[in-house]
Length: 104
Length: 171
Image 1 (cartoon, chains in turn orange, yellow):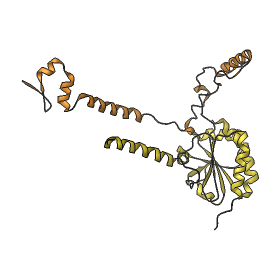
Image 2: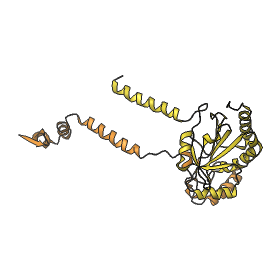
Image 3: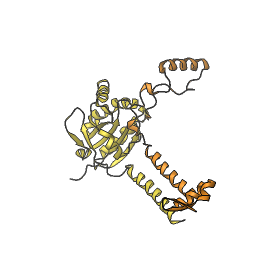
Image 4: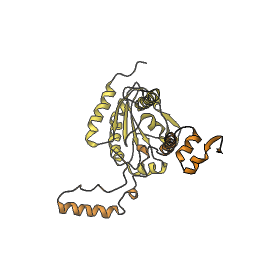
């Protein structure tokens, strides 16, 4: 007996056994791996489309103080200063101020 | 190498080559950017300065080193302007108001223009803020400076003076 899916003939036995890859192979005419590769390629190209390079001159918003990882920049700067003078070495932490304009 | 992998490598190679060519190299004729004058009053192209040494500086209000470079550029324009130097400050702020606020605090005594959408910055391949481009009297891009450090100011001035001393184009 044969089961008709689309215009392809898939054996009912195979479908019952749950041999998905075999069903898909019959359906799409080539091994399932190739189909998966194709789908991955499509997914990749869709994701890559969303990655836009932020140009050096577009970092104005990133340079704002409130874009910094520190919620209280002035407090952090003060603590850093005290820590630096106690340890008699400064610059152990990243300097405060802004998320980074990437300026030279 | 199969035909398909050959094609892939070919496309990658073409990408790298075109990227390298697009980055506006030194020694090549500088693009004629269309820039709008700050505070209204039409457009200006870099070609309009033909015969002069152009110091194109890309700046933005949020950029600290840019503010540092302004007094230097003011001095340069004042002292070398009569020899044929034109400093063009290209603003890249997204909001024009930001630029005006910056200029109130940091006066500029050279020509100021804005590059809407960063088209000119794209053409010249600006990689850092600030970036300065020195273009000679023939319109050829000669030097690119990334960033501004007071310690490098003298070397920059020497380059400008060397370009000014070159013969002006035969007319």
